[in-house]
Length: 90
Image (cartoon, rainbow, N blue to C red; front, top):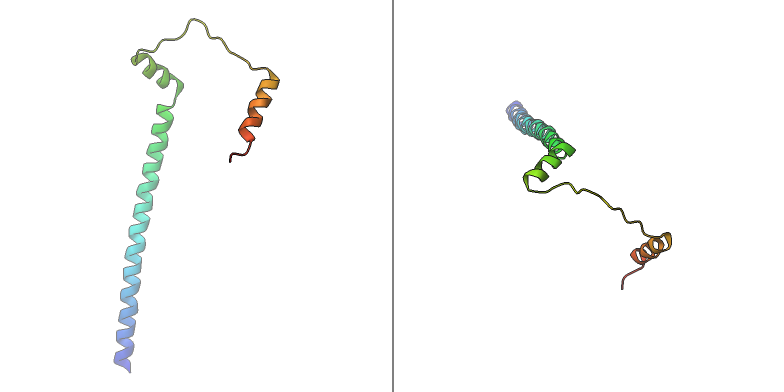
């Protein structure tokens, strides 16, 4: 009986060690992914800054317009468009 208990305890200990190794691996992977996430967020912030966008646009040959004209739709037109957008499709 004692021999069986020793083997049972050894088996449980082996499972605990294996589980802990797996957990350690998952924690390391989580830390790596969190660090990568921080890097990617910083990259998104840099790439989406207005100055960077203007700089890239100029490098692509785009130019600022001399004058910008804004068109405003009458309120009844805007309501009609909104109603069409909400209409069920068949």
